[in-house]
Length: 258
Image (tube, rainbow, N blue to C red; front, side, top):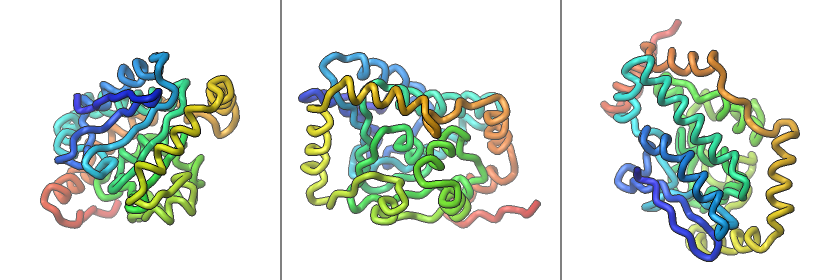
């Protein structure tokens, strides 16, 4: 499954655990998320949930080889899109506070994971990029909605259109993360934040989460048949074929103009 769960002192840590691939996501990992999140959220011993990556990075996005294999057909791409959307919903729907602890690379779909969390705490060595424009695919509409709620539509366009990398300082400045901690003291700083949340009133924290869902921008909209169809169509198009080839060949893609 490559998701590991540990619990200590009321804090449950869900780790994306593929360090050799910078925790690049597999379909099986997306599919496992809802059950893992539900189990942790239901554990009475848990007060705070942390999502993080292993090996010094949060995540490199989707594993392109796995993504290619599953998106070779429209039906496979639909399964993949729905699995990602369900995973983000499961993170977002947790009654307990969910904190993303971000070190190193946080790219593509891994950024979407952090968007579904309540808070994002980054080490100062963290870097962020959303790169579907290099592959000819789409970010899911629900992920775009979460991103726009944090940084605004103009900055969403900047990140998506240019696929550029943001360092932790810029991510903090535009609202993509809420805290930045020096990497050398990251574990201590993160632990202090988690302790301060853990000792807070569960009634206040969970009630606040529930009320915020009812306010605009609130919960990200559910995917529709149209948005899933758009995602699927992109995975079957020429841009994705060229983008995937370029990625595997470690070169810049050469997309054809419309």
